[in-house]
Amino acid sequence: MDSELRYKQIQDELEELFKAVPHEHMHIANKLIQRIVFMQVTIEDLEEDIKVNGTSELLKTRPRKLRERPVVKTYNALIKNYTSTIKQLMDCLPTQNADEAEDELLAFLKK
Image (tube, rainbow, N blue to C red; front, side, top):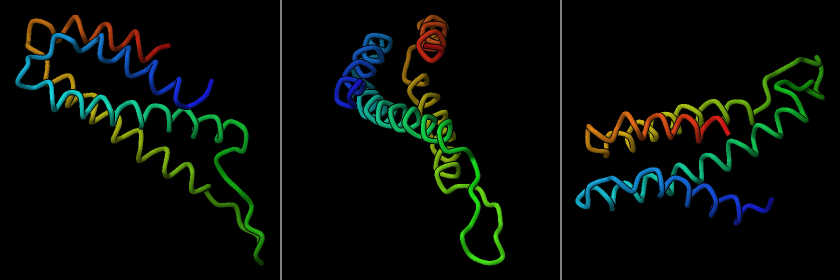
């Protein structure tokens, strides 16, 4: 699936999940959704790269050493930011909708 379609699909799903965000928080929620969409697509791409190429590489210099690939560090940092941003978005919801949205979000993330 091409990136534009992936971005659109994820954004539509998240906007549907978070439509209960109060109007005064909607601008912030939309910005967070945009960041989450970018991070999710990037994380999926990084995961694919890691599956194909592994988490470490053998340096070509002497002495030959095994080192963690830079993509793994990027992936780990992005996962932390992604989790934090999801939490910020959840905090935009009214309390009564938060539990329901959390269940729906967990189902979305498990896809």
